[in-house]
Amino acid sequence: MTTHASLLPGLPVRPDIVLADGVAFRPGRVHEGCGRSRRVLAAMLAGAVTGPVIWALPAWERDRLYPPGLAAFCDPGRIVLARGRSAADLLWVVEESLRSGAVALAVAELAEPPGLTAVRRLHLAAGAGGGRAIGLLLTPEQGGAPGVESRWHLAPDPKGGWLAHRLRARMAPEARLRLSQGPGGGLTAHPLAPPA
Image 1 (cartoon, rainbow, N blue to C red):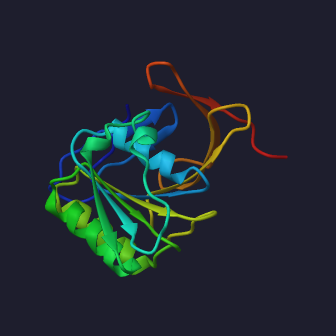
Image 2 (spheres, rainbow, N blue to C red; image 1 turned 180 degrees about the vertical axis):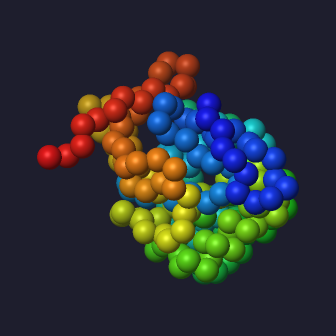
């Protein structure tokens, strides 16, 4: 596990949440997950943290979370679902959840990436909540939210498992990995060569 210096004075240094070698999420910050398997990424992260998880979904979205599918990665009983009528509602739920310090992870499923002001507000809320929680914005396609700590694209691998692409990170270079889940639920990462 890697550690980092606190980004806000007075906050303790917290270890990154590591899903697999090379796949880490800094607490007290906001990250972005995109691609076809972005919900799987959120479920993996929910399984790696300890404590309640808030998952904000658009009220207009017909897709639902499937608890037996989530159970392969995390305890679905730890997830509190919230519904919002607009992107602003979903971002408010995540902001207040992060500010409260009572959750380990706050997820917002968004139809498009939010602007820089919204992301900055979420970073500040995560810091105000003690820097323990992770904010995760799930966006379609290649994402693109400005100011996020990291952006991960996750897609199913035809050979089994998932193809993870770290598109952006403040403290790490772009990377491509193949993720596989072992019988005990743990994840293994295998580096992939960059595309030609």
